Length: 120
Image (cartoon, rainbow, N blue to C red):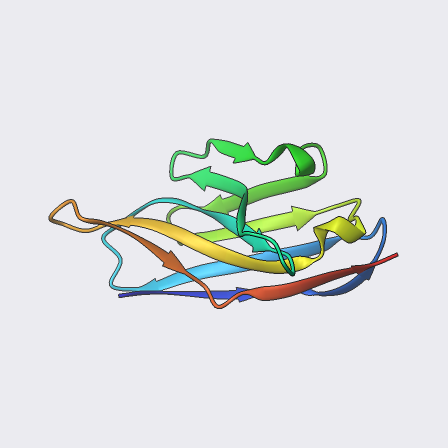
């Protein structure tokens, strides 16, 4: 099992910034990618940003130019720097890790989520 622990959510005004952190621990063989999903009230969970173990990144269009994803593959950590926040960024943010085991089985692990609230 792999455990993910997130931190960094909170309340911020429009235009402000927050930094989310996530660290994976447990029985890790290989993590192929880590990133963040979010789920706003009444909406489906959406992929916000992902960082591969090789360092490549991808973002949902609505956050491009405002959010930065970084991390340390050796330490199994990922960070999400969120700038120029908007009320529509309000959501619970979930860290995830795409893990491969020794027998090539793949599993997506999830954190418990951290709430980000952007006030107008």
